Length: 220
Ligand code: B1M
Image (cartoon, rainbow, N blue to C red; front, side, top):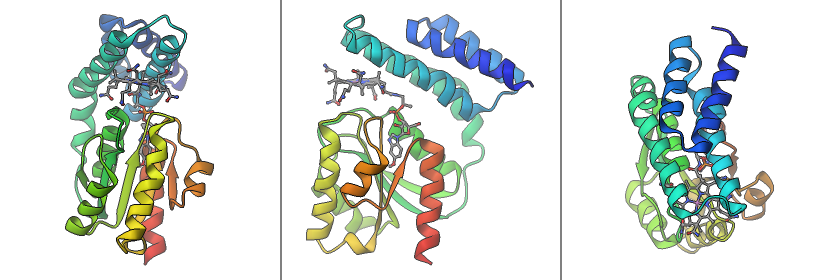
């Protein structure tokens, strides 16, 4: 398989997702897999790139809420049919336990699900609290599951502020020094993570896995 050939197909997949061209996106995914391209790169450089363009069109007023919904469905359906079966086969091991959720007020879960999946594939056990998770629910989950790591996802500039509230709630409950905290999501930055007192920032799902592995190494 040639890198160039894969990059070209990824670009086409991204464009098709952006256009909400279901057949074109599916054909591109099938072609990329047929070429033996890396599945995770297909997700990041193809599917996710298309989603970012969908967001940009929404911002410019070219797309509206139904298009955002449709893009989410297209992404999920391609993931379920083509990507998950290829990644899930590698699930196993027990590196550590991560409690993950999308913060209060935010219902975006595609990125969070991808992070949870990549953590599982890489040997982590994951308790997924879902979306719109309040600080209290994070605290309760830490008490109940005693995870090594708490992971928070936010896709909105407004809801990313909830991450600080979760960290404060963990402090108030006397649990902050018992868990490591990793944050991520489109508007979140390394600097913001540092500012709110998180232990790590994950740029994407692979980076999140690497950071979680490093967080556990620091503990031992
Ligand atoms: Co929404 N939306 N949306 N949306 N949506 C964004 C986020 C937006 C950037 C679009 C835009 O205007 N450009 C914009 C936010 C603007 C802002 O805050 N600055 C936006 C808006 C405005 C809204 C609504 C307010 C729209 C409205 O109602 N008027 C509304 C809010 C609802 C709410 O949450 N309260 C809304 C709703 C929705 C849908 C429900 C329709 C749908 C989500 C469906 C779903 O998730 N089940 C949706 C979608 C699809 C998007 C875009 C187009 C795509 C998001 C996505 O799934 N990307 C998005 C545009 C964009 O992202 N630029 C947009 C693919 C996914 C694989 O990437 O989620 O970034 P991502 O995850 C990555 C990394 O960020 C990282 O790893 C992942 C894998 O690489 N990561 C982590 C994520 N979490 C992590 C956690 C970690 C580590 C890494 O550690 C724990």
